[in-house]
Each structure stands twice: as structure tokens, then as C-alpha cells.
Length: 344
Ligand code: KG4
Ligand code: ZN
Image (cartoon, rainbow, N blue to C red):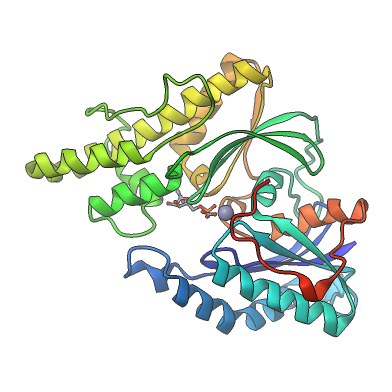
């Protein structure tokens, strides 16, 4: 089954051609430069940029597949699209395009949850079928992105159970907001990582670790952000220590993630971890996760290739491949709509 997949859930227009777990072509047209000067994603700008770029990204994706894998819209088997969660006006663009192509070329349509896409990003293979990772269910998955911080038990293909999530801000959002308070621009995660590394990843301020004492697996990062805000207000002279502040803030977020993950491992007795979502690009976090899982003689899986850390259509196509095996196609294409708050 060759699938054309589309993801326009936030600020990346992405299209991919996949076959099973293999990616034949993937194009990501990022909008970061358009949103940067506003300090965050502006919905109306995102919508317009997706609309302006989607046709080009589809064409480019087929061009990249190349002649040796002769492939076109006529001879793909199905079209997959992200239905949610995400920005409503952005999701709409991808869904509209997917419907249009499905009708024009008489293809079946498959909807995918963006979060299940992130989970499957650790099983994506290149066109030669590498890496060869087998599925060994169950997994304990932690999704850490700009919009989500969730623990999910990945029980079997397409079977998930959410066992914890953030009650307010997501971890990536907290890093972005702290970076903004420090005047570091958007998105904040990568800059925070670089400055923290330059400071040696030390924690000199010991900012609060929210919800560590609670017995459940939920998170709350808005209190941490607020205490950071008041700290900066009370200590304006400290802003010259931007590296130490970035480092201490990042450590507070990551320490919370690690301690909660340890709790989740103990509660579920699952020591096979999947850690995904934009924040997993962070090498400090990866090291902390590896150190943690060593203690439990388990394994931690990250997305197989760098471009799969952030939003991409490849992961959507790979999920769709599993959905085709069980016949999960959209029944009424005309009625299909986006679900901005779709849950797993
Ligand atoms: O998964 P993603 O690309 O989009 C969403 O679905 O939200 O995640 C974006 C988030 C942003 O908050 C961004 O600051 C964060 O991932 N991020 C990072 C790094 N690169 C991206 N956070 C920490 N360290 C990084 N290197
Ligand atoms: Zn995402």
C-alpha cells in the first residue's frame, strides 16, 4: 500500500509518500520564519501559508520520490490526513486538500490522530527498510511537544490508553514561554538547549518542580512559568545570567519529566519507553532518559531520524498503513471535518 500523507496541524506544511513503515519521500515546509517576529504561531498567517504552499509541497513530494520508484497521484493506493489535534484553521487546509485529491483521483481516505503519528515516529524506516526495529508491545510512550505532555500505554497497533497528561501548559510550551521572558525569540526550545549546554546544564536556581508529590501521572507547568516570571520581575539584575537561568529552567522541566517517567515505569511495570514530540530533539533530555532507563534495564526509543522529531507527514502515512490493514477508511468523505481537540 503506497500512501500519500498530509499534515498541516500547526506551522509546518508537510506531505509524504510512504509504504508500510518505509518513507519514500517527505517534504516539510516550515513556517517558523513567518511566525518568529510575532513570538508564536499566528493562526491566520498559518492558514494562509498552508493554503499558498500545499500544492507545491505535494508536487515536490512526488518529484522527490524519483523515477526509480515511479509513483504519482494516479498510482498511490490511499490518501491519509491529520484530523487533529491541532490548530483548526490549519487542519482545515490539509483536510480540504486530502478530500479534493481523494475525489479527483478516486482514492480512499484515512484520518490519523497527530499524536499517534508522533508515537509511530520511532518505527519509521527509510526506503531501504532501516532501522529494523521489531514491535514488542506494550510500550510506555511519553509525548512531549509544544501542545502536549502525555503518558500513553501503547498496547498494540492503534490501541492506546492515556494514563497522564498536563493539566495546563505543555513542556514545550513552558520552554517557549520562558525563552520569551528571557527575550530569546520563538521557538524557545532549541535556544534554551544551546544556552543551557553552554552553562553546563547546571541548576543554580532550583525552580519549583510542579506536581512531583502528586500520586498521579499528570503534569502542570504553568506554576513553574509563573514563578519564573516573578523571579525575573523581582531580580531584574539577574537577566545578565541568561545562560544560568535557561539552564535552571530547563533542568526544572526535565527533572519533572524524568521523575514522573520513573513513577510511570514503576506504576505500569513497563520498561520499554517511547519518547517523542518536538522536545525530544533536546540531547540533554535524551541523555537523562537513557540514564533513567538503564536503572530499570529497559530500552528507550526515540524517532528514528532527526526530521521526525518535529511535525511531519511521514509519521501520519505510517499510521495510515496500519489502518489500511484493518480497513479503517473514511466512510463519508464529504462529511469529514477537523477535530482540533481530538484525543487518542
Ligand atoms: O512536536 P512539535 O514540533 O509541534 C507540536 O506538535 O507542538 O513540538 C514543538 C515544540 C516547541 O515547544 C519547541 O520549542 C520544542 O518542541 N522544541 C525543543 C527543541 N526543539 C523543539 N525543545 C527543547 N529542545 C529542543 N532542541
Ligand atoms: Zn506535533
